[in-house]
Image 1 (tube, rainbow, N blue to C red):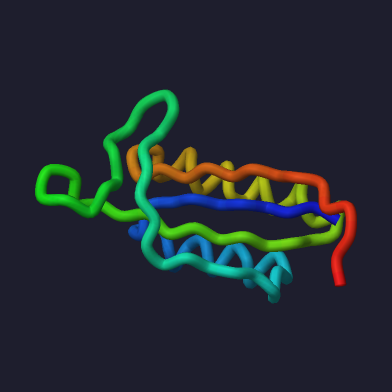
Image 2 (image 1 turned 90 degrees about the vertical axis):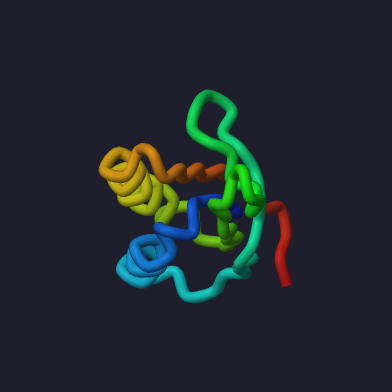
Length: 97
């Protein structure tokens, strides 16, 4: 199993949810309001007067076989909406109950 952490501009909420649904990712935890800035480029998303955009974040634990197709779909979305900001990170899960 793998843990997939997504952080993305809130403007991408509906497309991200559609990808999760299409990929059969039912279980996840979502944080509606997260702040941050990209490590390479893009504007900060701080929810302030100067930087009003906000992020949302999702953590999902999925089977190994779902990771590749899910990352491919997210990468296509990111490429189509480059200025919005979307990042995905994958970790190994050693145990779950």
